Length: 228
Ligand code: TIU
Image (tube, rainbow, N blue to C red; front, side, top):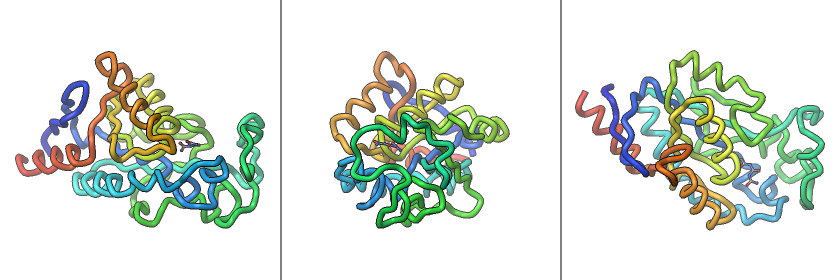
C-alpha cells in the first residue's frame, strides 16, 4: 500500500502501513465490566464503553491494511511476584489486586477478568502482549517486536487515556516512535482527564505525539488502498 496521509492534530501525518503498528491498550473485562479492577478502584466502568465501537473500527481498518496489530493486557502472575508492593498497596480499593471477584482474581493473568472484551477479541496472528505496568514497553518484549517488524510509527487506542495510553505514548515517543492517539477510541473514567489528556499530547506542536480519530484513520487507509 502507498503512504497514508492521516488527518491529525497538531498537523497531518504521513505514514507507511508496513512500518506502522496498531497498539490496542488494555481493553480488558477488568477495566470495562462491573466486578473488575476498574470498579474496585471506585470507578463508573460504563464510561469506557464509548471506546469499544471506535476501537473496533480502527482494528477493522488496520486488519484490512495488513498492519501489525498488538493487543496489550495489564495483569500479574498468579503469585503476584511481578507486582510491586507499592502497586499492591496503592489506594483504598474495595478489593486488592489478586483478591477473588466475580470475574476471578482481580488483575491476574489467566482469570476471566483479564480477558479482552469479546467485541475486540484478538484475531489469530495478532500479538497479545501481557504487561505488568501501565506502559506497554515496561518489562515486555514490545521493543523487540517493533524492531523486528521495522516499525517507526505507533497508532494507539484503548484505556485509559491518561494512564496506560499516555504512559505508552510517552514511552514510545522517548524511544523514537511517532505516536498517534486515536482520541475517540480512547476513554477514561474521568471525562475531563480524557479531554485534557489528548490536549497534552498534541500541545506545543505535538510535544509527544499526534491525535486523530477513528473515522479519519479508516478513511485515510481506504483512500491509500484505492490509490494503490
Ligand atoms: N485506573 C486506570 O485508569 N487505569 C489503569 O489502572 N490501567 C490502565 O489504564 N490500563
